[in-house]
Each structure stands twice: as structure tokens, then as C-alpha cells.
Image 1 (cartoon, rainbow, N blue to C red):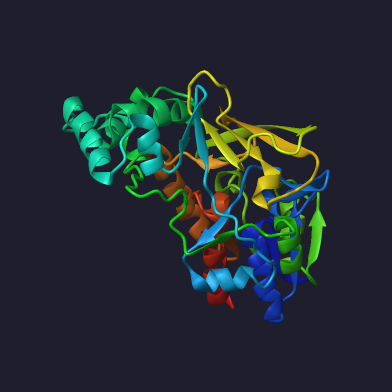
Image 2: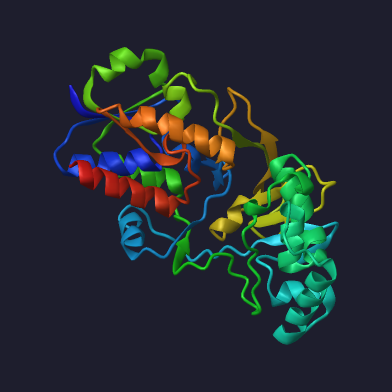
Length: 364
């Protein structure tokens, strides 16, 4: 018997297991994959830490969370400064004075604000009815056409005119020359990769990989007093109320015989014609000097049962359905539902850690 059976060896499960072990509790962590660390898993290819499930850049304003992760990893000084490629034109992200200068030739914040205000006024959209109208009413037509439209339509798989306005509540317009994407006090990448960080969290905890909890639920439940479940909440209840929707991502990763492919870790392709949304060059996350490089092209796709779920579709239909599943979850007295899938919530890494710490401390 264990005190806790933790389903999922990702960040939420690892933090919970670490804290429970410190408190003297026994834990068994299982995962249906053949590795720990969930979607932040990094693997070494030609000496380069490759983010198998997409780029993960740690950033937070929470000093406690920052101090917490630094127990398990040494973080570098990486600052996320993505570049947008629109038919070969390169723009800095987030939208800032470098972007506006390249777009219009303006050199002062006042000129940039005037240009945006002029385009917003020309559009004359009082009540945006869809994402396209919302974006134009916030940033004008040029920014929308070159840097928002194509990328967003690839992400969501449908025209911006068919997407609800609330998806873009605001656009980050910066009237400075700051290319730092995140407004976070602390950010960086673990020098040894995220897998090594999670390994240290799980040090001394029993872990079994290649174990599908839902296929042997009764026997596994019998092993512990309490289950911490980080899988999809609708799958736990055998989709009895219907499927929650996600967007999924497909990756094409290849090793290139060059030391530097694109000069930046993240380049977004914002035109509609390029089929992928962005290219990640992994070595630039840790300032690598290897003679080769590894890139990953990312393709956004519709999710279907059996695919890897990435991003919850936070519209009214799915929000209402999740609340119905949560009613069922709240009745499971010996099960804790946590994490991105268990709570059907888009979580940044620091928020996952914060949520796991709050939960494990409350139950202990």
C-alpha cells in the first residue's frame, strides 16, 4: 500500500510526489509514456537538448516558485525574443518599436501610436463581432494582416472571421525597443534540460513507466489510499458526458549539418501559406556551440480521440462541459484532479508548480 498513487510523471505529479515524500508519505508515480517529465520532456540529440513536445521557457514573477525550481536545476539567462517571418520579412515579437519601425518606418513612440490610431479609426469597428475585427480594433490592419491573421488561422484551423473575439482580449503593444516576450522577473532554461530537473524532483520516489492507469484502474486504485490524477478529466469518466476539445500539435524534427540554421530559438511563420506555425532551433535555448543543429517544425492540428491533447479549447461549450465533469470529480473523495488535463486549463509551468504546491500542502 502507498499513501498516494500519482498518475502522470509530469510537472504537477513530480512536485506533488516530492513534497509528499518530504512529509514522510509513500508514493507510486506511474505514466503511460516511456519517460518522465510529461510535455516538458527533453532528450539529447547530438548533444543538444531537444524539447520533444514543443518549446518550454520557464518564466515567473513568483519568487517562491523560482526558488523552488532552482533546488532542482541551474537555470541560464535565456530570454525569449521570438522573431516573426512574414514572406521573408522579419519582425520582432512582441509588437514593439522595432516591429513598428520595420512595418512603417516610424522612429518615435508618438509616431507609432499615431499610425495605429489612424488605422483603428479607419476601420471604425465599434463592437467587434469576431477575432478579425477585434484584432484590427486593437492594433490596426497592417499588424493584423502580417502578424496575426495567418498565424492565428493556422493555430485554430479556421478563418479569423469564424473565431470569437474574446480569444484576443488584448494585443501586447509595446512602445519601447524591448524584445523580451515575457513580462516576468525570472526566466530561463535549465542548463541540463527539464528531464534532469524532474528526475531530481522524483529522486527516491518509485516510478513505473509504460503503465496505462485507465486500462487497469481497479487494481491500481487498490494500491493506494489516495489517487492524484493528472490525465484528461473526461477520460477518467470514460467520456460519459462527451469529449472535451483540444488543439493538438505535430512536430517534424531533424538534425541539420550546420551550426546555425535560423539564428534564433523561435521563429514564427505568420503567413497563411507556410504550413507550419513556427520553427524551433533547440540549441539556442542554451547558447549551444555544437557543430550541428536540431530544428523542429510545428504544425497545429485539430484534436481527435487518440491524439495528444495540448491546448484546451476554452469556449462556452467546453467550459460548460468541464463544469459538469468537475461536479463528478468533486464527488470522488479519494481522487485529486490536477494539472493541465485534470483541470482542463492552460497552465504555464510556474502556475502548474504553484497549483501542485498549494494542493499538496492543503492535503498534508
